[in-house]
Length: 206
Image 1 (cartoon, rainbow, N blue to C red):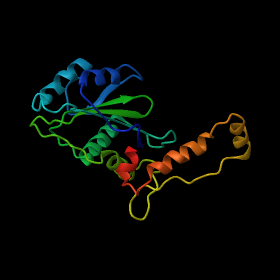
Image 2: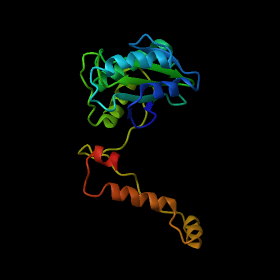
Image 3: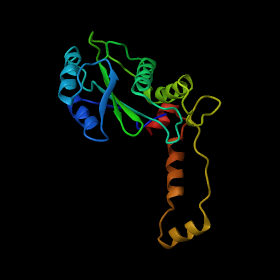
Image 4: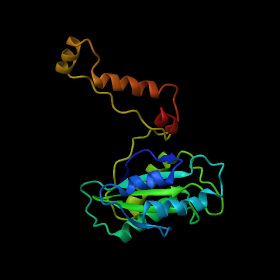
């Protein structure tokens, strides 16, 4: 199981909810809300949002996807268990409104409010790295296929990928075009991102 993309934050619940229901047969399978349509969910999220009008981006959105070769048969109940465990592990309380929308095949979207019904705000420091580690732990707990995470150094930093030499034919083709092979261009970008021994979160941001 893996996060489909970088965790996103935003200002509009209705727009995000519209997106979740407009493709792949999106349907609500869990969470702690009553609504099952974008309009109803946006109204519910609005109750929490009004507790902290100073928070410009109360929307929190992430997606969890199973690998294509996953052997465990997933039911709505199983997805709900994983969604609840994931949100608790990330640091959300039961007072933070959230909804799980199942898309076929094999992934769910989680739309949540960073503002709880009591006015508490989820800050989520280093949340993308925390999410990656949490997903690997949940894979083991729920008996799912354990996906490969990023390599780390002995000090816990993300290790840069192995540098591979450009093949001779590839190099000659780009020399004729007076251009840099994509492999070398990407390696240069990674090298620049690791300059100055950044922390894992700094490397990901770069």
